[in-house]
Length: 417
Image (cartoon, rainbow, N blue to C red):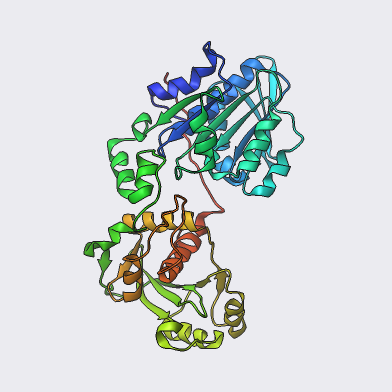
């Protein structure tokens, strides 16, 4: 692995535990791609090996898969380069690290939901590293913190900002002095491996509150329009000529509420929303049955070969109707609202999905879809039906196909301090 010279803040992360001062832990928050994770994980293992032998530690993330991909794989390479001996037991979710006669065990945990706290309950740990702590439930984090009962144990937190009233911001970042924690805030400029070109690219990827959080690293509330940039006519497109390589339909299903189905066509590596079905029973004066909505789905598809139909996961009866007819391959959508909105926003900004001018109901909802004013991360549950089916497409098909696979190519090289 090749390394650039560490930035000033990365060096602080690497050696904070070497100094006098007696901090009980460290929190690093800030922008995405700001160089927090690798230096923190290397520092965590170096601290553990310098102070303990024959002890247990935990490395935690939202899921075990994300921890292995985002933390363990690059950490494993860095430890090899630094002369540590690592014995993988990743199929059993732990690894053993040895150096100069000491050996410690590092367990991997996923804090996906409230039930995850039971996974770590009962362990005795000398330290725990939380990667993306703000994405984990409070119960899991607090249970893991409670496991660190050995003298000299320390806590390591790494996260990107969320909304200001998030429990991690309130209970940890706002109380760093009370909890005797060392705090470092990162920006993208603190990552020396990012070129000016890449910095500009990341700044273009986000807008609104996501820009404030992921680029500027601020804990800010979501407010106003969810997709404010869609008011620019340059974000709307004509249907491209020359045909399409693939088709997908995304569906938000409703009986009393509107149903919105979007037809997506792939052209030149870009997915275009080229046609839609939108039925509002209140506006039309009558509701439709599952079979009638299925006829609308068939009319939208026409004689095209549709690769997938992605449906609101709560619409179990409609999914069964589609399966029974046997024409379409139907899958339930992923339905994490905030992750999905972020993925849609990024895809629209990057141009990997495009909305065609003929999709009038989508365009209307883009101009009305707003955040709640309650201080929490949630859009208003109105004018959101096309917004939901677009989100299902982005999170389930556009991004979801890559969730189970990752590949890394690493070059071995000299570490520069």
